[in-house]
Image (cartoon, rainbow, N blue to C red; front, side, top):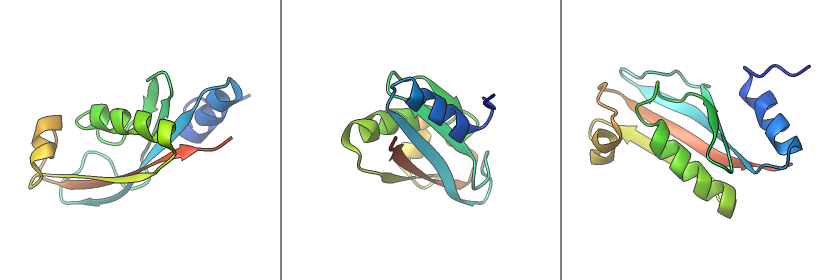
Length: 107
């Protein structure tokens, strides 16, 4: 039996079902950040996702990047913070900074 609350277990189940999958992991935070390093979000090739890297404020942008990464296979380090105008666009107004590494998981 698989633990559907574990992002890696869920990712494996999605891969077993034939989906492309990306994993986003918070690798660093500074100041006030909604999720701690190690928090993860898994994204399926059809746009479905589970988990959290930000409490919702940047998830849409991370999911969009993950879709591209599933397609290309090129991992990316995404950075969001209050000094970054993109952070305000996607809703990160908590006063902190977050780095999220997104990679395609290979079967």
